[in-house]
Length: 162
Image (cartoon, rainbow, N blue to C red):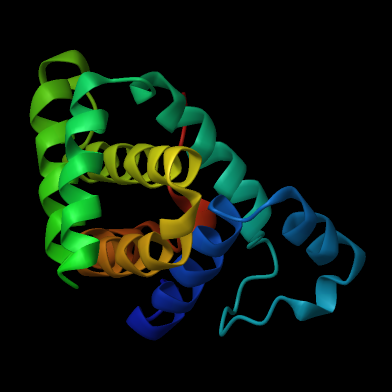
């Protein structure tokens, strides 16, 4: 049975937390696995493993000129408290620039790849925005691919490959 929307949102929040987590946050989770609380029915869900897979598929978009431009817009939006809209716009720009390179990839996976790449890039270049981007990325994924992730059976069933 596919997880409900609330379960997928809970999974998404954990996956994005570990995607943008620093090494010490991940090590802390590994030492104390009971800290991972999720309204997830499936025991195979591991947000750290899923975050690692997402990180690997996003690597192809690293150092893209579009990332730098989108980051400049995001920084301005952060100052104006319009981060979610700027994050969405940055992801859409990345998707448009990479659409011809991955036409065989499902549109939902293109959104996931682009949003994860953008989130990781922002964390790397502007670590002070990490917490704001964590929220924007979680909101973006829940809003734009949450239903699709649920239909796949949850994040642990999403066909993530490099």
